[in-house]
Length: 236
Image (cartoon, rainbow, N blue to C red):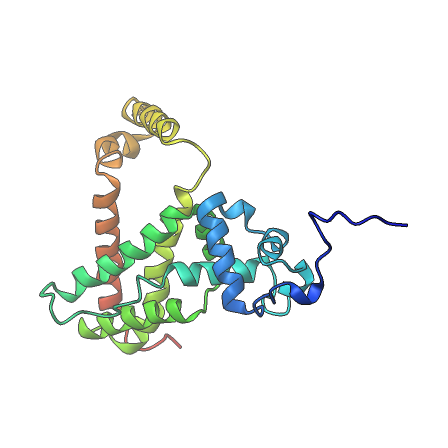
């Protein structure tokens, strides 16, 4: 006969508080909490299901797969960025500067979450916050007088650039190691054999000049100048 510990009597399932209903937003919120506390590599279906006190199979009713989950995480992270889309009336900056600031904010989100940056390069986001970002960029391009077709195609280039830069800087190396690698590269470029690599030697100082912010600003200007000069219709 089984004895019952009076200090720890059995508890009926009916007395346990009911679990909150499982929702897509609840899954994303749990994933974001794990991301903040443990990093993206810990954001797995099994880890999320444990946090939500359910089975991993239950999550697939709301999330297609891990890639879909990561895309939803990116969209959630873009929420603050798209809170005030477009060009606020209380800021006198030209449309080009506001567009650059918006893209810089997008890049900073990816810089803070490098694994998400790599995912964004291979997966097309489509959540509401991402679409708000695209809407804001298109509005700014229209304000700058960019033709509709050039804006529609150009926005892909504008988003690809900060994504690629974030991926480039998302390796596992520490900042000190990256600085050492850059210094070693600079030394090699500046001491390059001018007979074998004449153009590299002639432009060696320019090749290694400028910090990340200056180069990014220049690259966006080049992209915007090209988009402004692009044909208004697709080539036949």
